[in-house]
Image (tube, rainbow, N blue to C red; front, side, top):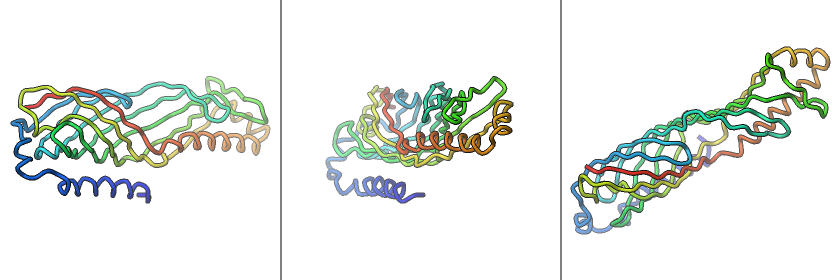
Length: 238
């Protein structure tokens, strides 16, 4: 784990562990008690949609787990001078600890997420000697970026203050935060008659063009070390 990743984890952990220091007195805590202990919720937003379960440890803390997915979406993009037909897949399973510093729904959230996030791009050609060598239907040039499996999360939100709620009631849920995903692992695969012919004619120029094109793809995806999260939804307390 990199220094930045460790620092984010340390900040989130410090904030959550130090939360009781800033909490209200036990008398105030008792005043904030509702009779709910559990909640289920559904939400949708920037990274897709999902469902979750929350357990109220006490009026100040909620422990929860959730799964979200965007499924698989197609999105064209450009890296350098080459166009790609892209496909993004993003599936998450997370565990969070929420801290509610006051007698309302505002919270600070820290957690860890197991993610399966992958971007695949099929290039339409190779930029060779200033010209675009178009690939045919039997050619393949696929670049892939896969993000790390475990990512820390820190954010703010509203709702899911389970132990402050009455049972058999509904609530509003909102999340705004960021995952630290670091640099993705990237790879590419190229094959086909057009590529083979180009290498037969000028192998060094072809290899250099392919490597430069892959470097442009690498530069583009490496900019997205932080993945934002924005969700709204509804909850039911019981």
